[in-house]
Image (cartoon, rainbow, N blue to C red; front, side, top):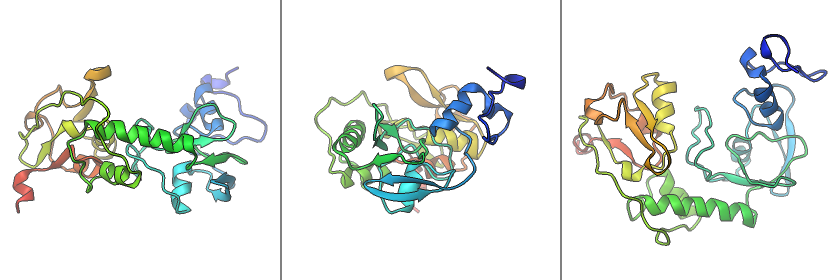
Amino acid sequence: MSGRNGAAPLYPGEKPVGPPGARTPVALLETRLGYGRYAPTGDAVRFTLNGREIEARADETILQAAAREGVEIPHLCYMEGMRPDGNCRACMVEVEGERVLVASCSRRPMPGMNVRTDSDRALHSQRMVLELLVNDAPQPPNLDTELGHWAARLGVSAGRFPMRPQPAPDLSHPGMQVHLEACIQCTRCVRACREVQVNDVIGYANRGNAAKIVFDFDDPMGESTCVGCGECVQACPTGALLPSLSLLAR
């Protein structure tokens, strides 16, 4: 049953979280389960990570708490300071009692939760995701990128699967070059352009196998309304967006 303005009723003693829009029934359920865009407030949360009990802040995700404790979890679509999307699925971990693996970048720990980042099931999932992504990337993988770093850390290489059709590079912009053959569609560039710089030039178009990153109405980058701020280049974890060849030569 909804309360005033469609907001879901709170449990006894539960404090409102976020703006009124965060209290819709779905948003409130997500928050109670440890998901959702609005961070909870309150006491620290104690949970078990790889057999060791640790403490997480109320607004931390499993990935953030693990990183603070020195436990590395591969991740590509997550970037500190950006809204987590949970779409690359490289950061999957196992939670005791739950049927499916969970994305640690968008899941918050709950009291008493038992999380394994190093179980056979979690590691198999992480390696499989990275193998699929590396398989479609230019070969050999660039170890200077985040994708190359995590592939090397987990001992992943390409070769088992057929490569997707690769688009031609876009060198139309004077300050940046676009190599969508290296793109994993993590949408970090989209969030950087839309939510950090608020330029709204980069978008995501089409569906399924035809899905891709676009500039404005699928224009060449040099003919788009891009202002050349470079935020997307800083955000890209694979080298799909790079400084132009002329800038690199300086």
